[in-house]
Amino acid sequence: MTQQGPSKTGLRAWQHGVVFVLACAVIISRRPDAVFHAQFWGEDGAVWYADAYNCGWWATLFREFYGYLEIFPRIGAFLALLVPLSFAPFVLNLIAIGVQAFPVNVLLSSRSSPWGGLRHRVLLAGVYLALPNSWEISATITNSQWLLALIAVLLLVATKPDSTGERLLDLCVLSLCGLDGPFCFFMLPIVIYLAWKPRDHWRWLEVIVLAMWGCVQAWTLLNGGFSSRPHYHLGASPVMLARILAGQVYLGALFGGVGQRPQIGFWFLVMFIAIAAGGTILVAVCFLRTPLPMKLFLLFSALVFASSLAAPGLGRRPLNGTTAWEVLVAGAGNRYWFFPTLAFAWTILWCYQSRAPALKVISAFLLCVMCFSIVLRWQHRALPDMHFAEEARRFESAPVGTTVTIPENPEGWSLSLVKLPPR
Image (cartoon, rainbow, N blue to C red):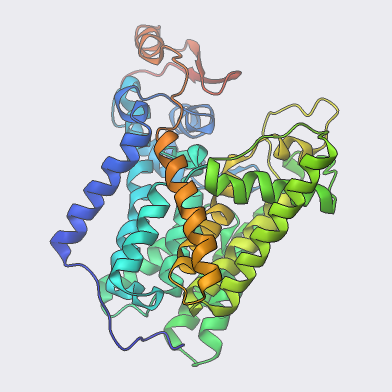
């Protein structure tokens, strides 16, 4: 399949604006507290905002965190410094919501025509917005790197940009993604494949951009970044892999994730292995028959999934004698299941449009289950109230030079700010 399809269908400029606003509204409806009761989450306050406030945003823009450079949330923290502290989480959440909505516009643009007709891409976008088991990436700038990666992949597998504005957009997205985590490592083989076959000059420019930022991230990782990451005993095994695939990916796409105890009964184990095998077969069939963009997306999702299992970042979570994979089986690391879960959900949707009767029946049943689960679990759980507005007022009234510690979500996290004179 060539990158330039015979027909390109998309939306007009004003329609893209309407779609973007509607996508933001859908995201907010799933997590209304992100806008109407905004609070910091994890690194939002404890790292990005605290670093920007205490040390200056430019001085910390290229500061390594958890092994990699992550500049996008640091840019967001700079923008949050322009408003009073009480509004800072609101600003960061709005930026995250905008990034989360943007893949819908990419899917509905004419450049995404190789994915299929406009109606099919509307369904893909709808499944993305309603995806179960995705609460950790919703309206949180810390995990916006996963959504930036999705935007970058969608642009990579799309048709080539026609205008200067589209080219600049692609390069900006690739650069932001390349400087925000390790995803450029997994995109590089995909864009090399796209550039190699037709000897495409634009694609080779994308290769150069991703390779350049990949070298920067690799240098950061090898010069202290890797040693700064906590290292766990994985406890990897085929059985644990099957349980993760079944409980967090395949059932996650249908029911929103199934947390499991480290030890389960024999028949439960048999059930999870059977689900893992069946889901993997369905994905394999889709990979063999689907168009090139979906093939490449499945490949990228598999690479990210494998990397997540090989080196999971569990943050401050104590393992208490358990292995990392046992913690993942129990439901930790929700962001790690985003790409494989979305890939499986899109696989079900593709199978429903297949001409094979068996695939249609199976996928129709799975789509019904997924829709029922989406209705029941539409809203993500709200963050516990940490009384952030009161803490912000306490900080504003503190004397200059005072160190103020403000608790935030999740439990046990906090940000420490040294009160500076007005500037």
